Image (cartoon, rainbow, N blue to C red; front, side, top):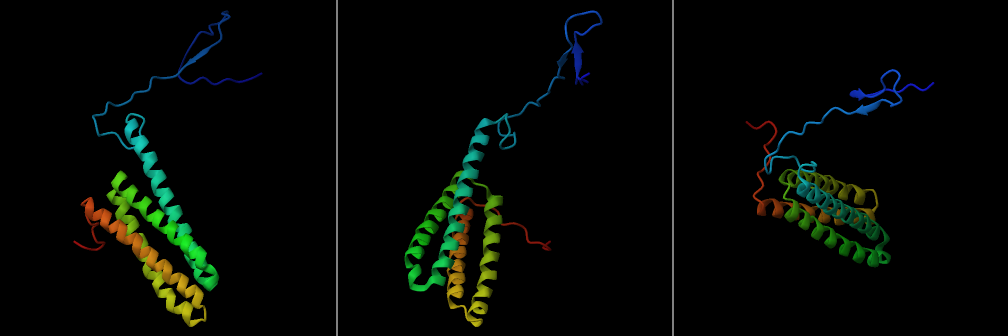
Length: 179
């Protein structure tokens, strides 16, 4: 014997009837929205869900290209002269990633995300800059050069993000501990 569970009101299925019970879901109420008040990606505002998809694709493409360029630069520096073709390819990929990042900034205008990424890459650059002399000190000049190239890449990313934030007049985030 199979047990069935019905949600909501049921109709039919009265004793002696040949009509099986039919489940009727409860009505769903959707609050009315005024233009511009719905959240991005909500089904009530299809324009923002399309733009959100484009924004996600642009940012993801930019970050993948920049990550690939960073790995390519570090690898190329470790290979010495044999890594010159890889370094050229990594430079082209970095330029494409920076262009995609700029397109994301101008298309999506997400000041909060721009400021977050700006701080994130600035911190990564400072930490990596501290590793450059350590790598050189332990006898890894190729790795040190690769780390320095990535510091330059992170600096370029921060410059693009800062220029975009300034162009959009993004507010600076409040300092922690500031009153």
